[in-house]
Image 1 (cartoon, rainbow, N blue to C red):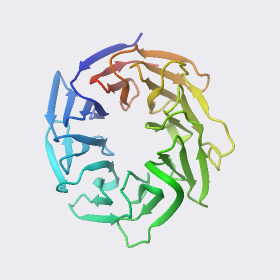
Image 2: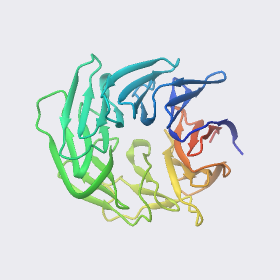
Image 3: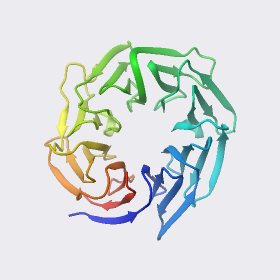
Length: 324
């Protein structure tokens, strides 16, 4: 059984992340905790809604109910990147060359590393943000589809239409596909080269967590009593192909997934606090954490894939130490 270093906190864990190999836990009350030769913490926001590490894992980009966008460094220092008054910052994304994007109402705003900003207005609220793996391209999830913006140029945005409310967005690691979660129990995707649609449905619940596998061969998702893992090896992605169902448990739903950084192994968190690691090749399971207090709401591997940080809706957090 892997060893678990527990950290019992007081609020819902929004995100877990590794900054310079130190585990960080961002909570809904606005406090960012870290395990760095003991338990330390930083008050970053009055109510935190979103958090994501920047691309070099040196800072945690956070957005809150206080209308601020901050960068929390590994030593706990808080740098205020933007202030939007009374608007809630509902999503953040870290981009290339130190760029940061955030959602505030109907606007998606990109802040470049030199402090310049560029705003993109939408007809309805901006629900999700993601930068492309290469180049300065920003995807926005919105009502009835997604929009691709090119913040560094005057290029015309690309509109990808599909009826319904799209709530989050992600590029495949090779940049060939764009996938959104939807308010209904489904994913939708586009093959960017030709605009072909991909509809991934059949979930009993909304998909609230997803994770790309190494080299983008698989996309793992929550929203069912198993991790639903879609194949993206073929040129048309998962179209016409069935997903894997890993870590099936009939009595509780999968709430969080996180692919190992180098192996085709997915960490699966459940509504009862259990965490499994499951291998795609043969569905072999390893128990990483027994059921605990609250559903798993955050999972993050360290860079080497030896440790897994987890957080729950009741604040139970910690690190699982494991070697495959």
